[in-house]
Length: 170
Image (tube, rainbow, N blue to C red; front, side, top):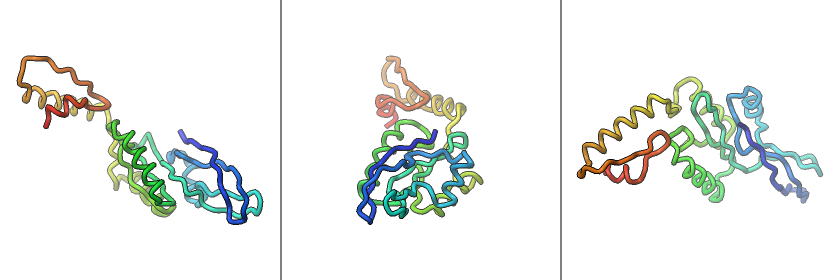
């Protein structure tokens, strides 16, 4: 689901104001793709002088049905990159396309990456139930082969792998 947030901005004319910008946007929605194609994603307007500018916030663009995500980073400051890395670390616990999405710095680059995913040029990294079952089987076989005692080991498979199981694989 697309998510907007209200942020505080200061314009070159000296005005300070609040505006709503996207944090996440669903690109399977044609209206949202139109926003990107028109170059209006997170473009805000100053209520004082009516000047417009691109908000420097990162936006996670996703298509859950197709199984891909792309970061739109109009500004690549240390603060923005730290935010993206932190967000990616949180999602890395989940075996999914969210874990390490590509990054785009311009609308053109963002649209190119989205089209590459849509046309199958880029691998989406989407994990389905068959993939999870195969991962579970391989992990179970590997653990069984490395197990040194008669103790049973319970592993939760589906979303992630426990640290204990990973240490047995090492």
